Every structure is written in structure tokens, then in C-alpha cells.
Length: 180
Image 1 (cartoon, rainbow, N blue to C red):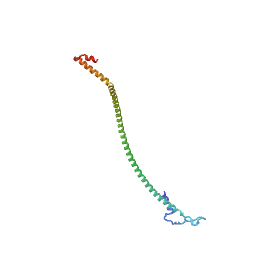
Image 2: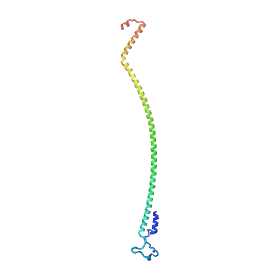
Image 3: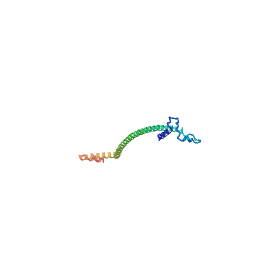
Image 4: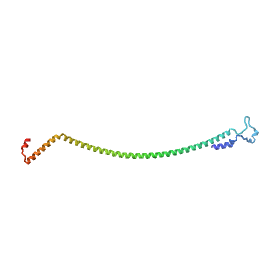
């Protein structure tokens, strides 16, 4: 649109490189009437060249801005593609690490389950051993408390057996009666 406007203004006012105003021949019959009082002769305004040069400047600026924007868009696209690639790589490595951690967790859960089963088994075994210890301790206490009584009873039993053996082998009853 700016180029079309520039062409129309350039055709009408001429190029901005030409600052000399070219006069045209007046239309036929206009010289005869002359210009009305207070009016000057009809001619092209000198401000038109400023508008043409302004349009040319705007067109040049818009071309520069368009080039800058195109470059900025290309840079942004390249940065976006780099960002996407880095993000994808990062996500892939994070997902792999997550899977690895899940496997480790499953392994640890299995180990924990085995350890708990081992603990239960060990506790059962300790309980059984504790009961055995208490039983042995009670027997030992019984033996220790009754040792002298049992030893005396055994001695008497041995002596009685020796006397019975002596009687059966022909000994006299006199020795037996004296002890009783």
C-alpha cells in the first residue's frame, strides 16, 4: 500500500530527487479569465515532496524492520528448537532415572519383605530358645536345691543295696542291726 501511495504521489509531484518545480501550461481559457482576486495561480504544492520523501523513509524503515523481525523470528525459532531438544533429552534422562529408582524401590521392597520374614523366623526361634533356657534353668535349680537331699538318699540307697547284697551272699545280720 505504501508503494502504491508513493507511486501516485511521485507521479503527481515528481521524484524526491528533483526539488525544482516544473510549471505546466495553464489550461486553455484559464488565462483569459485570470485568477480571482485574493487567489494565487493554481500550481502544485511544494509540501508534496516532503510527503513523498516521508513515504520513502517509511518504506525503507519498514523494510529494515521486516528484515530485523524476520531475523528475530528465525533466532527465536532456533532457540525454541534447541529448547525443545534439550527438554526432550532432559525428560528422557529423568524418565530413565525414574524407572531405575522404581526398580531399586521394588528390589528394596523385596529385600524388606525377606528381612521381615527372617525377623519373624528369628523371633520365633529366640522364643523357643528362651523357653528351652527356662526349662533347663528350672531343672538345674531343682537339681541344685535338692542336691544334698538326693545325695544323702543315694548314699543310703547304695548302703542298703550293699547290705542286701551282703545278706544274699551270706553275711550276718548283726552288722545290719547295729546300724539301724
